[in-house]
Length: 192
Image 1 (tube, rainbow, N blue to C red):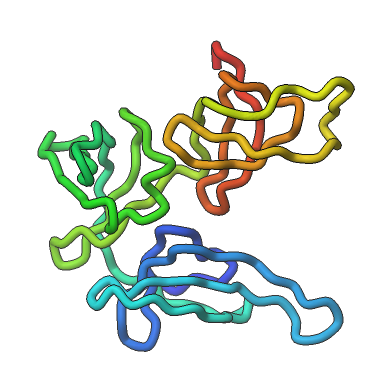
Image 2: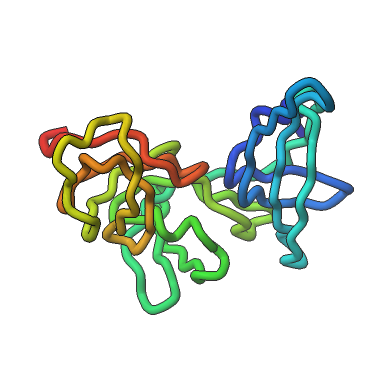
């Protein structure tokens, strides 16, 4: 097993904590000015029992990454509450339920490449790319004189995900979204 700094923990990672394997659901770097120093606030789920846990881990602590086999897979389609993935090496298909993916399913579009993590030959989590491009299907119209420093407005993506975007971003545009925290990164040109 490899040890990593707490600041290297990412959503979808599998870590060993208190002799159990946990999948990271959310992680945020928190800095308390003056007192207490910085820490990582990590929400994680036990892969065996399904229980959730919140931990504060000091940024200079080292955490054990669980030994997992990662396989490169492509998301193909959704069938009911199941999400179908295809192994890029042997073309075998794998079906994962909606509750297994939790909030990560809102970033999945057909043909997106992900890593599916296996522990003892059992799928235990997926790791999304750092950013995905989605199309805005619904948002408020542009306000005259809006600039990059203006306030943000909610925008609904084609997957149902709601992201806060700058007011100059319009319905029908493609944007890049950070998969760790669900934040708007940038507009994407059609030819990109």
